[in-house]
Image (cartoon, rainbow, N blue to C red; front, side, top):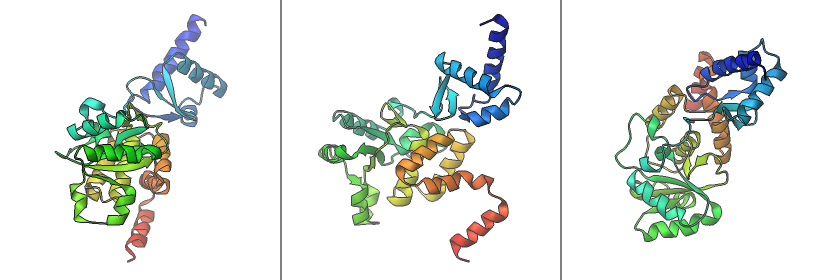
Length: 258
C-alpha cells in the first residue's frame, strides 16, 4: 500500500475509533452515515482489513467495536463477592457450561453495591441438577426457577443464597462471567420473575447508569433478551427514550388503567 493510502486509511481509523472510545458498538449502516464521502465498497474493505489486522472486532453481524478493553465485559473473578467465587469454584469442576451473572457482572457500573446479595448463575440444562446438588452439599440454599414457581412469594425467598437459571446461549460470557448486557437482562428477569431481592427502583437506577456509562451494546442486549425470552420487553425499554412524550403518557394510562 502506498504511503499516501496508508496515511488516509490511518486518518479514517483514528476518526472511526473516536466514535467507539467509550465502548460504543457501531453498525455498518451507522459507519456509512458517519463517512458519506467514502465509497461504501472502500469503507467495507477498510473495515475488513482493520479486523484482519486486529484493530477492530466484529461484535455481531454487521456490527463493529474496538478489540481492546471491551467495556462490556464483566469485572472478572477477583471482583466477585466471596460466595460467588465459592459457587464459581464448585461449578467449574463439573465441566458444564455456566456463567455467573446479575450483580456480579455489573459491579463496575453500580452506584450502590449491596453488602451481600444472592448469587445468580446460569447453567446448561444437563448440568442444573448436578451443580445444584453440589451447592446444597456445601451448605448453600439454592433455588431454581421451576422451584420458585412452586413456592411463590414465600418468606424463604429472602434466605436464598443462589438462584439458578437455565441457559442455552453462552456466547455472551467470558471466563464464566456474563458480559454486562447479559448480566442486566438476567438480573431483570430474576427481579421480575423470581422475586430476586432487588427493588424495581434500584433495577431502574442500574439500567440508567449502564446507559450513562454506555455499557450496553444494542446487538448484545437484544441477543441476551432473546435468549432469556424477554426481547419484546427489552426492545420496548431501549426504544423508550425515542418515544414522544405524549406517546409515553398514553402508555402510562394503558398500564395503570386510569
